[in-house]
Image (cartoon, one colour):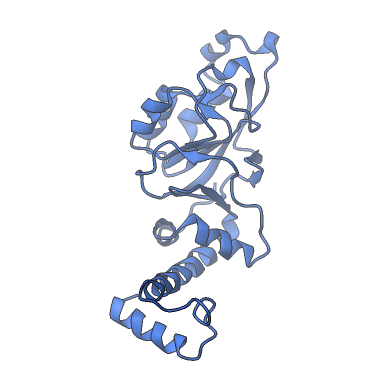
Length: 239
Protein backbone atom coordinates (compact mmCIF):
# COMPACT_ATOMS: atom_id res chain seq x y z
CA UNK A 1 0.00 0.00 0.00
CA UNK A 2 1.29 3.44 -0.95
CA UNK A 3 1.92 5.47 2.22
CA UNK A 4 0.56 8.96 2.42
CA UNK A 5 2.86 11.90 2.98
CA UNK A 6 2.46 12.84 6.65
CA UNK A 7 2.24 16.53 5.78
CA UNK A 8 -0.61 15.70 3.42
CA UNK A 9 -2.38 13.78 6.16
CA UNK A 10 -2.23 16.81 8.47
CA UNK A 11 -3.45 19.17 5.75
CA UNK A 12 -6.43 16.94 5.01
CA UNK A 13 -7.36 16.88 8.68
CA UNK A 14 -7.89 20.64 8.47
CA UNK A 15 -10.24 20.81 5.47
CA UNK A 16 -13.82 19.76 4.85
CA UNK A 17 -15.15 16.97 2.67
CA UNK A 18 -17.25 19.59 0.86
CA UNK A 19 -14.12 21.55 -0.09
CA UNK A 20 -12.41 18.36 -1.26
CA UNK A 21 -15.43 17.55 -3.43
CA UNK A 22 -15.00 20.90 -5.20
CA UNK A 23 -11.24 20.45 -5.62
CA UNK A 24 -11.81 17.05 -7.21
CA UNK A 25 -14.65 18.36 -9.37
CA UNK A 26 -12.27 20.94 -10.83
CA UNK A 27 -10.22 17.98 -12.09
CA UNK A 28 -13.28 16.32 -13.62
CA UNK A 29 -13.76 13.81 -10.78
CA UNK A 30 -17.48 13.91 -10.03
CA UNK A 31 -18.19 10.66 -8.22
CA UNK A 32 -15.72 10.51 -5.34
CA UNK A 33 -18.23 11.10 -2.54
CA UNK A 34 -19.44 7.90 -0.88
CA UNK A 35 -23.21 8.19 -1.10
CA UNK A 36 -25.63 7.59 1.77
CA UNK A 37 -23.16 6.97 4.59
CA UNK A 38 -23.06 9.04 7.75
CA UNK A 39 -20.99 9.10 10.93
CA UNK A 40 -22.26 7.15 13.91
CA UNK A 41 -20.91 10.01 16.00
CA UNK A 42 -20.03 13.45 14.66
CA UNK A 43 -17.50 14.35 17.35
CA UNK A 44 -14.57 12.10 16.42
CA UNK A 45 -12.67 14.66 14.36
CA UNK A 46 -11.65 14.30 10.73
CA UNK A 47 -10.80 10.78 9.55
CA UNK A 48 -7.86 10.50 7.15
CA UNK A 49 -6.17 7.31 5.99
CA UNK A 50 -5.25 5.04 3.11
CA UNK A 51 -7.99 2.68 1.96
CA UNK A 52 -7.78 -0.97 2.92
CA UNK A 53 -10.78 -2.77 1.48
CA UNK A 54 -13.13 -5.67 2.23
CA UNK A 55 -15.62 -6.95 -0.34
CA UNK A 56 -18.84 -8.81 0.33
CA UNK A 57 -20.98 -10.70 -2.18
CA UNK A 58 -24.49 -12.08 -1.65
CA UNK A 59 -24.36 -14.92 0.85
CA UNK A 60 -24.89 -18.48 -0.32
CA UNK A 61 -26.29 -20.50 2.56
CA UNK A 62 -24.27 -23.67 1.97
CA UNK A 63 -21.01 -21.68 2.03
CA UNK A 64 -21.77 -19.18 4.77
CA UNK A 65 -22.74 -20.92 8.04
CA UNK A 66 -21.68 -19.43 11.36
CA UNK A 67 -18.84 -21.97 11.49
CA UNK A 68 -16.91 -19.99 8.86
CA UNK A 69 -15.78 -17.63 11.62
CA UNK A 70 -13.68 -20.44 13.07
CA UNK A 71 -11.39 -20.12 10.05
CA UNK A 72 -8.55 -17.72 10.89
CA UNK A 73 -8.24 -16.96 7.18
CA UNK A 74 -11.85 -15.75 6.93
CA UNK A 75 -11.65 -12.50 4.90
CA UNK A 76 -13.57 -10.42 7.42
CA UNK A 77 -11.35 -11.60 10.28
CA UNK A 78 -8.19 -11.13 8.20
CA UNK A 79 -9.24 -7.61 7.27
CA UNK A 80 -9.70 -6.66 10.91
CA UNK A 81 -6.32 -8.13 11.89
CA UNK A 82 -4.36 -6.93 8.85
CA UNK A 83 -5.71 -3.45 8.09
CA UNK A 84 -2.62 -1.29 8.72
CA UNK A 85 -2.48 1.27 11.53
CA UNK A 86 -3.39 4.66 10.12
CA UNK A 87 -5.44 3.15 7.28
CA UNK A 88 -9.23 3.20 6.85
CA UNK A 89 -11.11 -0.07 6.43
CA UNK A 90 -13.63 0.46 3.62
CA UNK A 91 -16.31 -2.22 3.22
CA UNK A 92 -18.32 -2.97 0.10
CA UNK A 93 -21.62 -4.24 1.50
CA UNK A 94 -23.45 -3.73 -1.80
CA UNK A 95 -25.39 -0.78 -0.29
CA UNK A 96 -27.39 -3.38 1.65
CA UNK A 97 -27.91 -2.58 5.32
CA UNK A 98 -30.37 -5.38 5.98
CA UNK A 99 -27.52 -7.29 7.64
CA UNK A 100 -24.56 -5.86 9.53
CA UNK A 101 -21.14 -5.39 7.98
CA UNK A 102 -19.51 -5.77 11.42
CA UNK A 103 -20.18 -5.18 15.11
CA UNK A 104 -18.64 -3.46 18.08
CA UNK A 105 -16.09 -6.19 18.90
CA UNK A 106 -14.49 -6.04 15.45
CA UNK A 107 -14.55 -2.24 15.36
CA UNK A 108 -13.02 -2.19 18.85
CA UNK A 109 -10.21 -4.38 17.57
CA UNK A 110 -9.61 -1.99 14.67
CA UNK A 111 -9.49 0.91 17.12
CA UNK A 112 -7.01 -0.80 19.43
CA UNK A 113 -4.80 -1.67 16.45
CA UNK A 114 -4.58 2.02 15.50
CA UNK A 115 -6.77 1.95 12.39
CA UNK A 116 -7.88 5.47 11.44
CA UNK A 117 -11.53 4.64 10.77
CA UNK A 118 -14.06 2.30 9.19
CA UNK A 119 -16.63 2.90 6.45
CA UNK A 120 -19.38 0.67 5.06
CA UNK A 121 -22.19 1.33 2.64
CA UNK A 122 -24.20 -1.19 4.67
CA UNK A 123 -24.91 -1.09 8.38
CA UNK A 124 -23.24 -1.84 11.71
CA UNK A 125 -24.73 -3.86 14.52
CA UNK A 126 -24.09 -2.71 18.10
CA UNK A 127 -24.20 0.80 16.66
CA UNK A 128 -24.64 2.59 20.04
CA UNK A 129 -21.48 0.90 21.32
CA UNK A 130 -19.57 1.73 18.13
CA UNK A 131 -20.70 5.36 18.37
CA UNK A 132 -19.10 5.54 21.82
CA UNK A 133 -15.72 4.22 20.61
CA UNK A 134 -12.83 6.57 19.87
CA UNK A 135 -12.69 5.64 16.18
CA UNK A 136 -14.53 7.40 13.33
CA UNK A 137 -17.13 5.03 11.90
CA UNK A 138 -19.54 5.55 9.02
CA UNK A 139 -22.49 3.50 7.81
CA UNK A 140 -25.86 3.77 6.10
CA UNK A 141 -27.98 2.83 9.13
CA UNK A 142 -28.03 0.47 12.11
CA UNK A 143 -28.54 -3.22 11.37
CA UNK A 144 -28.73 -5.98 13.98
CA UNK A 145 -28.66 -9.23 11.91
CA UNK A 146 -25.23 -10.82 11.49
CA UNK A 147 -23.57 -10.23 8.13
CA UNK A 148 -23.69 -13.99 7.49
CA UNK A 149 -27.43 -13.83 6.81
CA UNK A 150 -26.95 -11.77 3.64
CA UNK A 151 -23.25 -11.06 3.05
CA UNK A 152 -20.39 -13.41 2.25
CA UNK A 153 -16.90 -11.95 2.76
CA UNK A 154 -14.86 -12.74 -0.32
CA UNK A 155 -11.84 -10.46 -0.89
CA UNK A 156 -9.58 -8.08 0.99
CA UNK A 157 -7.53 -5.20 -0.38
CA UNK A 158 -8.99 -5.28 -3.90
CA UNK A 159 -10.80 -2.54 -5.83
CA UNK A 160 -14.37 -2.19 -4.59
CA UNK A 161 -17.46 -0.03 -4.91
CA UNK A 162 -18.67 1.67 -1.75
CA UNK A 163 -21.72 3.91 -1.89
CA UNK A 164 -21.38 4.23 -5.68
CA UNK A 165 -17.76 5.39 -5.42
CA UNK A 166 -14.84 3.34 -6.73
CA UNK A 167 -12.27 2.68 -4.02
CA UNK A 168 -8.83 1.31 -4.85
CA UNK A 169 -6.42 0.10 -2.16
CA UNK A 170 -4.24 3.00 -1.12
CA UNK A 171 -6.71 5.71 -2.15
CA UNK A 172 -6.92 8.44 0.46
CA UNK A 173 -10.14 8.40 2.46
CA UNK A 174 -11.32 11.53 4.27
CA UNK A 175 -14.39 11.68 6.47
CA UNK A 176 -15.91 14.48 8.52
CA UNK A 177 -19.24 15.14 10.24
CA UNK A 178 -20.90 15.41 6.83
CA UNK A 179 -19.62 12.38 4.95
CA UNK A 180 -16.73 10.55 3.28
CA UNK A 181 -14.76 11.18 0.09
CA UNK A 182 -12.21 9.14 -1.88
CA UNK A 183 -9.10 10.88 -3.24
CA UNK A 184 -6.99 9.02 -5.81
CA UNK A 185 -3.61 8.40 -4.19
CA UNK A 186 -1.59 9.89 -7.04
CA UNK A 187 -3.14 13.36 -6.63
CA UNK A 188 -3.64 13.42 -2.85
CA UNK A 189 -0.75 15.84 -2.24
CA UNK A 190 -2.01 18.30 -4.86
CA UNK A 191 -5.61 18.08 -3.66
CA UNK A 192 -4.54 18.67 -0.05
CA UNK A 193 -2.57 21.79 -1.02
CA UNK A 194 -5.44 23.17 -3.07
CA UNK A 195 -8.00 22.43 -0.35
CA UNK A 196 -5.91 24.31 2.23
CA UNK A 197 -5.88 27.34 -0.06
CA UNK A 198 -9.61 27.04 -0.73
CA UNK A 199 -10.34 26.77 2.98
CA UNK A 200 -8.40 29.93 3.76
CA UNK A 201 -10.32 31.87 1.11
CA UNK A 202 -13.68 30.45 2.22
CA UNK A 203 -12.96 31.43 5.83
CA UNK A 204 -12.16 34.96 4.62
CA UNK A 205 -15.37 35.06 2.58
CA UNK A 206 -17.39 33.86 5.55
CA UNK A 207 -16.05 36.70 7.68
CA UNK A 208 -16.91 39.19 4.96
CA UNK A 209 -20.43 37.83 4.54
CA UNK A 210 -21.08 37.79 8.29
CA UNK A 211 -19.89 41.40 8.30
CA UNK A 212 -22.62 42.30 5.81
CA UNK A 213 -20.90 42.14 2.42
CA UNK A 214 -22.77 40.75 -0.58
CA UNK A 215 -21.54 37.54 -2.16
CA UNK A 216 -21.67 39.23 -5.57
CA UNK A 217 -18.16 40.05 -6.65
CA UNK A 218 -16.81 38.32 -3.53
CA UNK A 219 -17.63 34.68 -4.17
CA UNK A 220 -16.29 34.14 -6.79
CA UNK A 221 -13.84 37.03 -6.34
CA UNK A 222 -14.52 39.26 -9.34
CA UNK A 223 -14.45 42.63 -7.53
CA UNK A 224 -11.01 44.27 -7.89
CA UNK A 225 -10.56 44.90 -4.16
CA UNK A 226 -11.06 41.31 -3.05
CA UNK A 227 -7.56 40.06 -3.85
CA UNK A 228 -5.91 42.78 -1.77
CA UNK A 229 -8.40 42.37 1.07
CA UNK A 230 -7.73 38.64 1.13
CA UNK A 231 -3.95 39.13 1.16
CA UNK A 232 -4.24 41.54 4.09
CA UNK A 233 -6.54 39.10 5.92
CA UNK A 234 -4.11 36.20 5.41
CA UNK A 235 -1.22 38.19 6.74
CA UNK A 236 -3.22 39.22 9.81
CA UNK A 237 -4.37 35.64 10.45
CA UNK A 238 -1.02 34.01 9.73
CA UNK A 239 -2.54 31.86 7.00
